[in-house]
Length: 390
Image 1: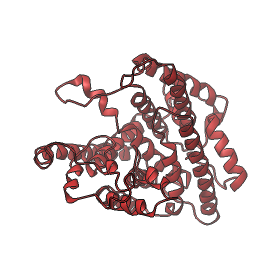
Image 2 (image 1 turned 90 degrees about the vertical axis):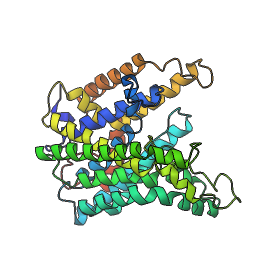
Image 3 (image 1 turned 30 degrees about the horizontal axis):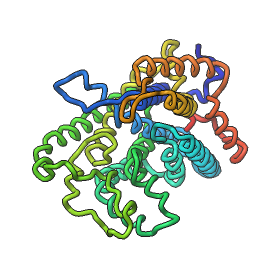
C-alpha cells in the first residue's frame, strides 16, 4: 500500500512512473531472451518487437524527468537554475561512475548508464530551452546525424590516443550518444508541456502511432530499392561503420554506396527510420500510461514503485545476470540455460514486490537515495519541492 513517505511531490505524474517500469521490464526481456527476426506472417515472432524500443523509452523518460525536476512547464530561473545545474552535474557523474563499475564486472549486457550519465550532463545547458527548439533539434539529429556519423567517426579516429574512448560513447555499441540524444531531447521537450492534461495523452498516442507507422511502412516500401542497390546486404548502418578507428592508416573508407545502409529500420541501427519509429512507439507507450495511470491506485502501486526506483532495479538485474551467466553451461553461441520465461517472470515479480515494500518505508530506492544525498550535500537543499526525481 502506498504511503505518504513514498511521495516526492504532490503533482507527480504516475503514468511516467508506470511507463518507466514497463520500459525496465522490456529491457529485462531483451537481456534474458534471444529473439529472432520479426515476421509479420507469424504472430509468434511479435515479442521481438520489444527489441530496440524499451531502451529508447527509458532514455526519453529520463528527459521528461529532468524537465519535471527543473520546473516542468515553468523552468527554474535564477538561484534555482544554478542549483538544478549543480545537482544534475553531480547526478551525471555518479550515474556514469555506476555504469563504469557495471562495465568492469563483466556484465553480459550492454550498459546504458554511461550514456545516461552523459545525457544528464548534456541537459545542463538545455534547461531553459523552449520545447519547440528541443523537439526541432531532435528532428534535425534524427535526420542528419545518421549521415554525419561516419565522417565524425573518421575525424575522432584521426586524433588518436587519448581519444580512443570517445567512439565507444559517441558512435559504437548499442547506444551511440550522437543519435540516441534525439530520444532524450524529445523527452526534455515533452516534460516542458502539460503532461497532466488528459488531452495530452491522446495527442501523444495519435502522433506517436502516426510517426511509427510512417517510419516502418516507409522502410517496407523501400526494401526492393535497398535489395537492388545492395544485393549482398553488406552496407553498414550508421552505428556499424567502424573505420578508420579500428583500422588506422586506411583512411576514410566510407563511400556513397554506404548510404544504402540508411534504408533500414532494424533495432539499434540508428538510421532515421529506426530513430523515428522508436520515438513513435515510445510516445504511444507514454501516452497510454498517462491515460491509464492518470490517478494513483492500490493495484497499480507495485508497478509505479518499480518506476520510482529505476536505477536500483536496473543495477540489481545487471548484477543478477552477471552472477547467473558463469553458472550457465551453454555452449558458445547457444542461449544460456537461464534464458527462460520463468526467469523473466521471477525478475519482474521480485522487482514489483521489492519496490513496493521498500517505498512503503523509504522515500527513494537505495541507489536513488544515495545519489540524492550526495547531490544534497554538494548543492544544498532545493528551494521548492521536487515534482519528480530525474
